[in-house]
Length: 313
Image (cartoon, rainbow, N blue to C red):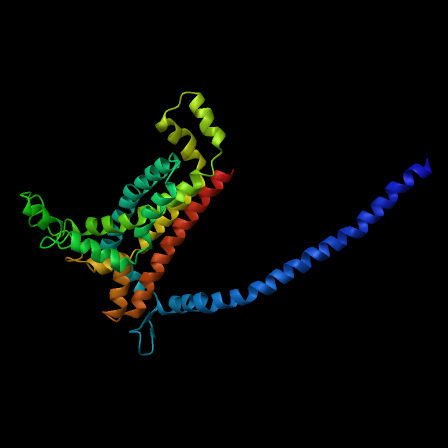
């Protein structure tokens, strides 16, 4: 009986000695990983952490960006809460967000779903859709400025054939149209990125789910609703996150096409920060404005983090 029990005792002793060895190897590998990550972490702290801490400090000062800053406490933050220009700009950012949550998101989902059903030439369509996103914003803006110019653009071409719908319509100079025109140009460049993003997610869905849906008699809309949307939910949440943050921080197209005009009709928060810092030379107040945008972005990140946790559970 004792001879039968001896081997298990030996195995237990071997396991007992190997366990600390595994723990030691794991700790060693973690230390090696940390050692390799330290240079990148140091650069991050220097390039990102340093300016962030400085910006927080300057937000409590009266500073023109050149002379020595003067500490003024919470004055910049009190001014921020009562700044009509900021609330006007944030309202435009909210309109921007609503536009991006409808037009490019809807077109991106539809385009990706149609491409997922194409067996030949899908790669060519993906490249064509993605090209506007690859072009520099300055180039895209100039293209659409020429197209929508009432003197030499689309309106002029229609006028030659007797169609006068766009006569006298100044898309980027009309207070009622400027913001929507800028958002249209921006969304035109962005929806191709969403097509490629959603298409990659759709291609990761198990083909058996589509086959089962077709056997049950599902049409294309039902496949999209009951198979595709649940299958790409994490990617859709990610897209909503980058749209929300991008709409809050958008700068290039409003700056290039209208610079916030006419009369603030297309002004957005990032333009206000830029104008406050470099035109009005109120760098201290601009720091407070920029930090407020960062805080709003952090709120979006926290909300989407909760959404992603709900999906995982």
